[in-house]
Amino acid sequence: MSPARLTGSGTLPTARLLRIHPLAVRNRLRILEKIFGSGLRDLRARFELLPALKIEIMTSE
Image 1 (cartoon, rainbow, N blue to C red):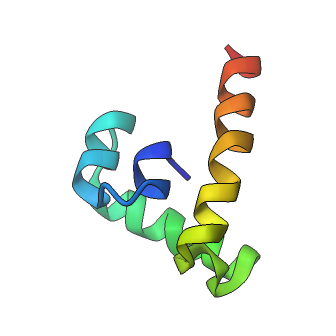
Image 2 (image 1 turned 180 degrees about the vertical axis):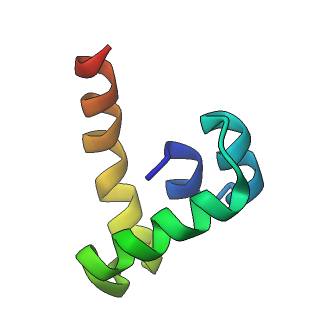
Image 3 (image 1 turned 30 degrees about the horizontal axis):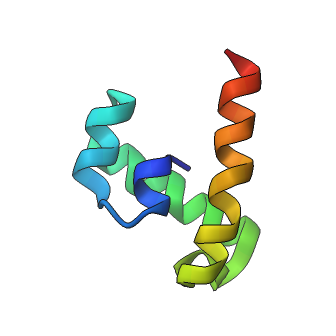
């Protein structure tokens, strides 16, 4: 999941950021919702995931 989506920026900005089609973003979000449940729709849960995602991105570069 992209940081843009976690912060609520929407599918299109996320797709542009990742340089993929917006439909691919939606499909990946559906997969993540199957794994993590509906908690990804919760603002607090997304806020808590954001630092972990940023750390993962930083360490993989």
